[in-house]
Length: 156
View 1 (spheres, rainbow, N blue to C red):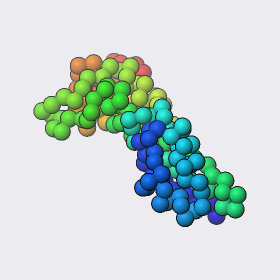
View 2: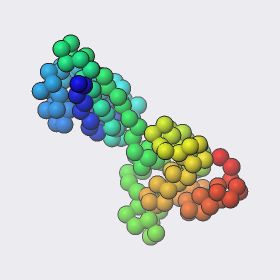
View 3: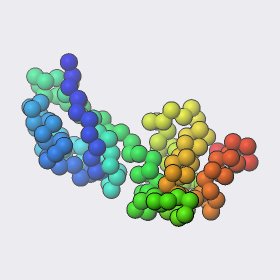
View 4: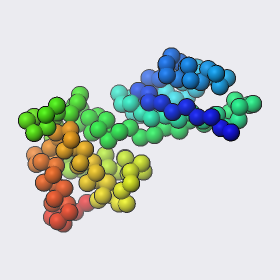
């Protein structure tokens, strides 16, 4: 039976220390080699925490597979907008302002890991994250943009 280790790592900056090293050591894998491969596969997500799964396919030959997930929507939005964090009190402060194109771009990136059936639904989900983070879209409240998309006033 294949054993798996799931963890979150900073893109391109995994280390042999916790949580990866202690989890992989007992499985007999070359931890440094695995970490090097993880860093190579996650370098495009630099500065973001990325879900990674290491699966030992064959314990005898030490063959393994690394699966890299997609960072959380909030992390993608923060990177896209160049902000450190969302607003602590979203009704009192605005963390940033995104364009609808940026929101659609994040939706396209996340779509494979979302339950959304199409780009419109994925965009609505990303807009929901904008609501939580205090991010406006084209200077408007993201709830208003969601309403406009649902009403057909904005097409995706």
